[in-house]
Structures are given as structure tokens and as C-alpha cells.
Image (cartoon, rainbow, N blue to C red; front, side, top):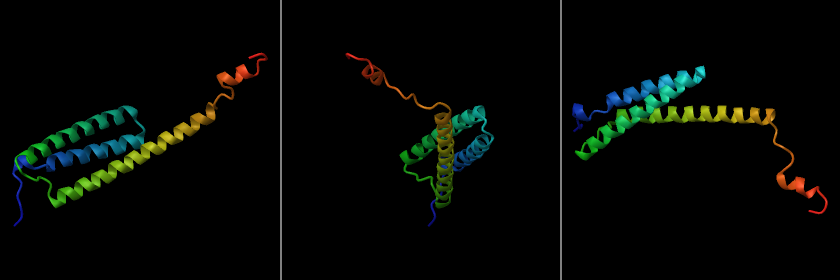
Length: 120
């Protein structure tokens, strides 16, 4: 017998909103639009928090609102987020390498300057 989820415990709208925000975040990352990235990240964070509240509410009344299909959708969203994290990490590493080339580290430290002075 298949279990049915009451409309007030259905997470499908929250998961659809999460997917929409992930698509928008993908576009903002590709465009390298920092304002859009910040806005999309905030929207995604808010939507994830709302989904978590809805899930906890359903769990409190003994309902599992995550159907196998919804679980698969959430796993795909998780994979997408991991891909976005990897992209951001690669971009940050690239920026760090470039800055390292543009601004090489200083060759002297505080203590090496003192060591060159006689009598110290």
C-alpha cells in the first residue's frame, strides 16, 4: 500500500523552489555577477530553511514527506550544489594563484633583519 502525504506535509513546492534557486545560482556563477550570486545564495538559504521547517513539522506529526521520487530529486539537487561548490573552489584557487604571482611573498622576515646586524 502506497502512503499518501497530506497537502500540508507535501515538500514538493519547497523542493521545486530549491531547484529554481539552484538554476538561478548556476546562471549567476556563470555570469560571475557577484550581486546576483549573493542574492541567489540568500534566496536558496531561505528556501532551504523553509523546507527544513516543513520537514520537521511533518516529522513531528509522524509523517515522512519524502517519497522515493522526491528523494531522488533531492539527491540530484545535492549533486548540483556539490558541483557549484567545486566550481567556486576552483575559481578561488585560481584567484589565489594569480594573486600569488602578482604579489610575491616578502623575502625577509622580522628576525632575519636582526640577524644581519652585528652585536645582536
